[in-house]
Image 1 (cartoon, rainbow, N blue to C red):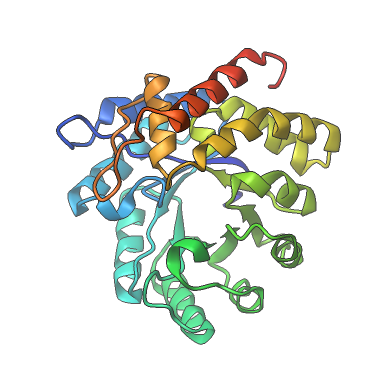
Image 2: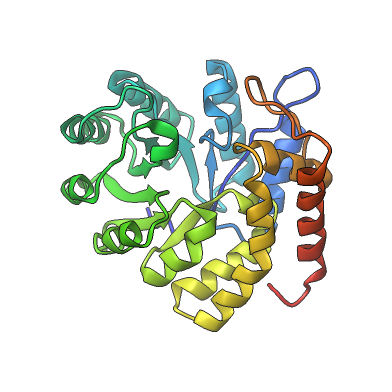
Length: 297
């Protein structure tokens, strides 16, 4: 699978009674495709995957596959804390039509590098889908190091990594792992431009939920090394990226989507809705400013 460019980590919209809002999810998918998004992630961390019941996960993924109808790849979040559960969910995602599995490093249990190596190899061997590794230590409590990734990339079913560590040294070391059959995707909107200029093939993005067209322009510029255009797009997006940092993901992005008419702002407990106040106003101002910049994308 050629996963590259602007990839949106979709939120999961809920109705006021807590049920899945499939109508809003369909609108969000259409908004992404119209905005140039090149692949979508369903039931990742932004999609509140661990708040979904089994049948909800199935409905959400099957709906996305049918609605997208092959226009862009559908990537399924399948990472669990245990290896056997991850393999089982990856197989289920394949049966539901996903093309790629995004597999986060096991959270909370804090495996060693050897444990991570064996975990990902097991998923790649048995899960029946191409695997994107996903490293996000701030959420999982463990760090998939480049040395371990360099071993894992030799497995034919492991096609790349979403790396959310944003420091310059990690970006450099991850970019060195790129080859024809293994891609580096940024997992951090704030450093996405730097990562793509360094060699990342694209970004799995949160802010793309709100600004798919501008984020696609950023990816197009950065992945071909156009530094001037990249800087222009980054400057336009940065106030919105900063506004989203006011609360744990996806609280703020759901508030922004509500303002755009693309779903309710309420996440599932233990996450709570972004309150009215300075942070909400900063988010609204950033969205309004970006919408007024007609020359960005």
